[in-house]
Image (cartoon, rainbow, N blue to C red; front, side, top):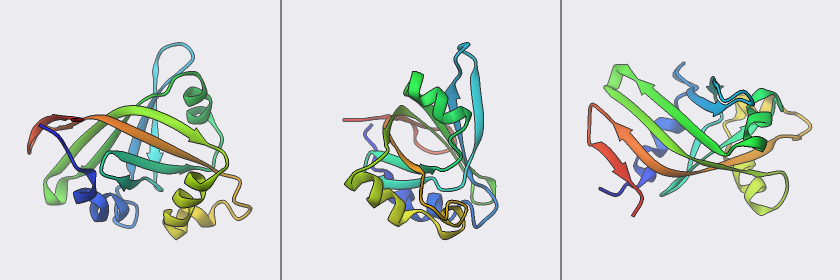
Length: 139
């Protein structure tokens, strides 16, 4: 079954404001996973997520070595538990970086007043919604 992420635009975009930011998992240099919240996660279009990488920490280092990621969206109040799997691309300049920056929620962008962040665009290959539609893949 194919998927269209735009139906999740409002839910993912409001996740931080509702106290439940998305969680990103990357692959560390040693092959072990690393996870952390990403309050700026947003639905970019039908098959891509994006976030503003402002910390330039471990996740960015991991993404420079391996693009493989997983994202968890968990909203138990509304019965939503969704895992996204895909490949991340880094956009350190250019129009896609600007597009993502313009859509990042204000509280996250305020943490980066000099706008030195990097747009991370995730090409979602698979969506797993165990309490809903099950496993969905790209067309």
